[in-house]
Length: 142
Image (tube, rainbow, N blue to C red):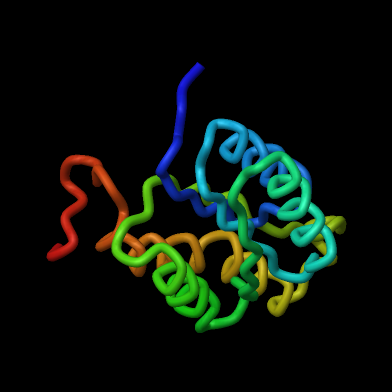
């Protein structure tokens, strides 16, 4: 089994589903987990409590990634907690609309695009300077 002792991890959309399971697994492996949520504060705090009850380290942080400054706000909170090093970034947050394609309005598409495409792009841009072991070709100065 691998260990993430002494490492920090951010999981976006971690309050429910796959994000929740991923955050819990990272905590079991020893990581200090930042549990991001957009609207599910109670679920995020519940996960943090579960992790802490098992002697893990976790904190809940909120940002609406559908807003123009959502990614920057989340990155600022992450840097305030972890300082100058983030080891694991899991971009899990996303939204969908249970509707037929014909029923989508421009505002629905804009919100979907902002949350699922724009925010992950700009979150990586904001966090790249503190991501540990950056992949080749991903330099902060580019």
